[in-house]
Length: 413
Image 1 (cartoon, rainbow, N blue to C red):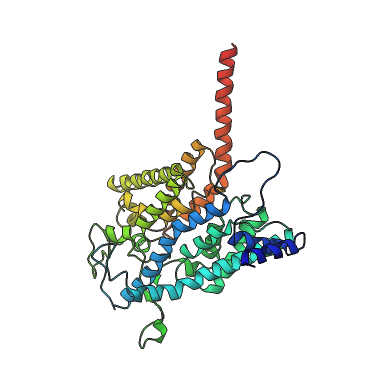
Image 2 (cartoon, rainbow, N blue to C red; image 1 turned 135 degrees about the vertical axis):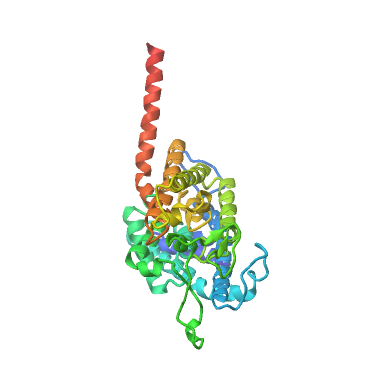
């Protein structure tokens, strides 16, 4: 008797009992459900929620693998053990086994804690409430390790995951009923509960305590942190040892410090195209968010060019940043592609998606510039628009109803 048959026997044995959802979840996760609809109208299609979630995970895996290499690369670079990458995305200095080993050692526990704690909470709620375990956390569990700093303590991540799953999803009724993106709810909890760990102003260095004469961590600003302090930290070309530390190519490829999966704009772009091609991610939201960010960036550049703000202002650094640079620095690209497009919390109407995405991009750059203590805005912008998405759809639908009523009156007049 194979594993599938054994699990099916357990499923039948516990059918109707308290622990049935737990066994059903294991069986469904490993195999396709062997039950079909026998009555009522239904749509015949090859896709289901599990396949959809697995497709999103596949688009995230390259960012995860790259983040492992980048964590090791930033570690060795901070210790002065290697030179900065200068030969492009396929540089052997970056894709070395030593970098992968260091990154894997630090990031894999984040993934294990994210999935282990999150799925445990899902199982508990499924058993208590008597419903099936939902597949929604499959994507959330992958997103969470990618949007946190690499040195986040595991206990802290576990507490945040419990909060995010319970408060961000289960209290609303589970997957499909939540009004806030669960992964961003977890990130927001970490940000407000443990702000010093979420600032991102240090480069994590593995094993630094064991090195003689080496401090616990080596200070190193992210690009946004440097810009917020008025430094010119990114340019078309970079010169290590000078104030300009990163080139545009560094930021686009991802050879910069930052949260695990948010640094490589190239891989995020490829992941976005994959989601659009598979018809899971909305291209309207992605494009409109980019347009909103560019619009806000152009407004700030215009204010600086007009001389309305001087070089001594604390807002000057990010205001004077080239408007299109905002697309490839920080977590903007990752948030727009993988979280703003969440089909549960985003707008559902086509016109609503344009409005929803544009406001996310616009507000992201607004918060980024005017909040120098935490020079990032996409997380707060998406959560804010999650709340307003139903309102946007409501007025879009009402607008369409009014137009149709006017046409009807004209025809009957």
